[in-house]
Image 1 (cartoon, one colour):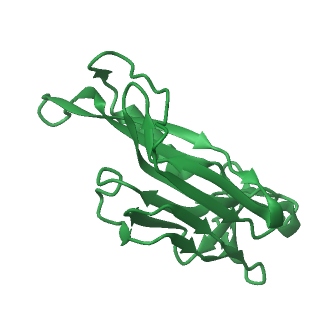
Image 2 (image 1 turned 60 degrees about the vertical axis):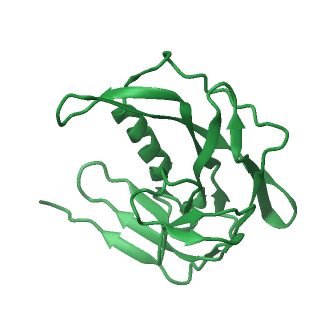
Length: 220
């Protein structure tokens, strides 16, 4: 999975550094008075499933250093802590989880962003040679660090996302011939900057009456 989580991992690998005191303590210990963000996903199909929340915490206490590729100077930056939080299935195929705004711990972790969404877990109902592909959903940022690329739309109320997605079949005919089934919508991953929200509901729809297909070239 998931290309958003892979992006987080790439960021962490690029920022290879030695922190102020070595490897940071990534243990979370939310204080009793922390605010929680309640997350609810309505699974739209027997062939799909919500993926675990991809949560990124940030620490401005346990800093790290890296060498600038421009002039060789030393840059001090915040540390990141990426974790997965599984959702628990409830009645009516509602999946729920909650995320602490204050992660606490020795590094004073605070919530920076998380990804929520669904993906195909069974692709063979639309083709026996299909395997599940990429996921869809939303990235929700809770600080300026996560939304610094400027592509995040601000939201000031509890979220109720209701996107419609369609099957997207990608047939690969060069190299390893692996045909994938993904989901495709007007915006596969929404980018939202949240302010003072306590609830995120994601109720997507999957319309398999319309199928998008990409057929790759058979030769160069």
